Every structure is written in C-alpha cells, then in structure tokens.
Amino acid sequence: MSDPRAGTGGLGWVCRALFAGDDVRVSVPGEPPAAGWRTVGRFAVVPDAARARFLLPVASARVTAASLLCFNALREPRTRALRWALGTAARTGAARVLPSLTVSIPSEVDSRSRYVVHHLAERLGGGELHAAIGVRPPDPHHKPTVQLFDPAGTPRGYAKIGWNGATRALVRAETAALAALPSGAGFPFVPRLRYAGEWRDRTIAVIEPLPADVRAVPRPDDPYPTELLAVARNSGAATAPRPLRGSEFLIGLADGSTGAVAAGCPEAGRAVRAAAALRERYGEVAVEFGHWHGDWVPWNLGTHRGRLVAWDWEHRAADVPVGFDLAHHGFQRALTLDRVPAAAATEAAAAALAGYGPMLGLDAGAQRAVLDCYLLELWLRTWRIADAGAGWNTLLHPHLLDVLADRLAQP
Image 1 (tube, rainbow, N blue to C red):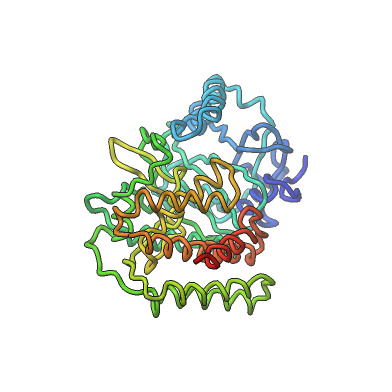
Image 2 (image 1 turned 60 degrees about the horizontal axis):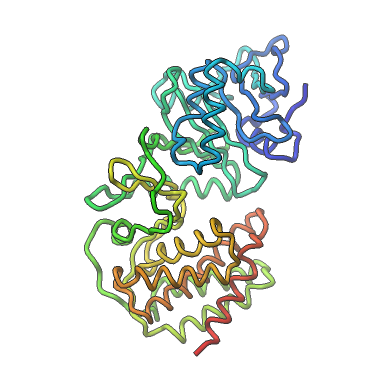
C-alpha cells in the first residue's frame, strides 16, 4: 500500500485537499483497514493511480454508472462516447476491477468530523451520499470537483472545496454571488446554493445539481446577448452611461496595477502605464456600468427546456463596463477552443463586440474602450492567480500586456 497524498501529481493534491490529517489514512491499492481503523470511503481510480482522471464511488454499480453518465450531454463528443462506454460497463460492476483507493479513520471517531462526504451528507439532510471526484493537474488555483449522489444514483449536489487562501476566496465569492443573483424573466437559469460553511480549515459550497436534461449550448459561438445583458443589468433596467474617467472601475485598474508593483511583479510597471493610457485615451468615453458573470464561456453555459443555464459564478463582479462578458466570450473561446495566440484571440473579441456590441448600446468607440479595459482586467486576474502560487498562464502573460501596448499605440 502507498499513501497517494505523498505524490506530486493530480491524485496527490486532490487527496491532500480532501482527505487531510494524520487521523485520516488514504491508501492505493485499497486494502482492509488496520486494527482500530475503519474504512469510510472506497473509490475506483480511473484509469490508474499514475494517470488518475476520476475517483468513482463503488458503493453500488448503479451509483458508479450514474457518476459517469449524469450530465454527459454537456461534454464534447469524444469524452461523451468514452464516458458512455465506461458507464455502461460500470452497470455490470466492472469498475471493481480498477485500482482502488480507500479512506480510513480511527474506529471510535465520528466520521462526520473527518470524512468530508459524511459531513456534507449531514448538512444536506442526513441521508447517505457518495462522491465522484474529478482529478486535475496540481494547481494552487484548482478546487476539487465533487459530485454527490444518493444510493439510487440521483445527483444531489456539486461541492466546491476551498483548501488554500486562493481557493477559499473563490468559494466564498461564489457563495456570495449565488445568494445575491436575481431570478427574473430573461435571467439565465442558475443552480442555487444548497449549503455553505467551514470545515477542518476548508471552505465549502454545495451547489444544487444541474437539470437532468441539460444540454450543451447548440451554438458555442453565440454569446447569448439577451441573457448576457440581463446578467449585466441584474434583471433590472438600463442605467445611464457614465464617462470612464473618475469611475471606481478605472481607479480599481490603476490601484490593482500599483499593487502588483508593490508585490514585486517585474512586469507590473507596464500595467501601471497601461492604466494611465486607458484613462487618457478613453476617459471621456461614456459606457453603461453593470455586473458581469466573469467567466461567460460555452463550457459554463447550457440549455434546459429552451432556457439558457449558467454556472460557475465565482468571478462575478459589479461596476464594470457592460460588454465585459461579451469580450471574454470572444477572447476565451478563440484562445481555448480555437487554440490561437492572445493577439488573435483579441481580434476575435473585437469581432464579437462589433457583431453584438450595438445590442448592448456600444458604438465603435465604446467597443474599443471596453476591449482594452478588459485586457488589463484579464491581466490583473492572471497576475493574482500567479501571485497566489499557481504560476503564470503562459498563454496570457506577458502577451496581454504586449497586445494592449500595441493597441494603445495605434491612433
């Protein structure tokens, strides 16, 4: 047996984040617990410990299959086919031949104080729950992804677990956002908060499951501007445009850039100069200010009975120029799905603003101002993630500052 928490790969960090403590034992391959200990969790490791992608619950074949097949329509075709094949095999109990992982605690200890799944089961009503856990590469900015199922295989929630300073802040931000979101006409359907709390130095939010028949958006290139505008206006009325100069938003860009200098970021001086250039070039441009989702991208959107569904609200913020989500959708879709460099992704964002910006009240001058402000906002987010210990996203840094400098140098 070995303790995967000692490993440097994805399985190691996930197990450290979820099953921390000297009074918790984790072993691969799973074996019967030592004297004085009892097993509280057992998982199949897919495909194996060295290349782990999932930890699947093996309480029953029904639960294992559900953990693979639920919400499969959201996934891209190749992944969907693979999960369908694995889920079909799991119905026969085939998952039990995979490498196993067990979680054990001292026999006399209340499992709700040591095993996060049992803690959440109590908080969500006391019924039995089982967890399916995604495994991603180590990253101080990543949170374990934990889907909770009842013994019938019915999804009961999606848990986000903050395990360090950066991820705890993100979980708390999403908790606050979900509590404040409206549900009026035109606003996307949003899975709501089921539980939020602190446990063993972890910050936890459990979001209700997505609708069972949710589907991926049929047009990933469509930013869904009607719903995007409802998010920006918080399902309220339009507000009068205001000049960027003197706005709390533009002041925040300058303060954030100065903060990066103070923190020792070697490139932050360029951000300070960019913030000043934005103020000088666009100070008199008037834009409507509102909210943004913060990560409005096709993989955080779906459809359910003709209505848009939106999730992952941890970057939601107020008092930003209306159109930020539109710029983000165009930029991130090109960067991630089309795999183009930051300069080309910026052009894709500009095209999205040109195509849909008028629906948001943005003329050509406002579109350019919104995009350039967005680029600096995105660089500041990238820096905060790097400063939290995750390292720089090399797709964005220093390229965002290069692109922004080039754009601001143009007449």
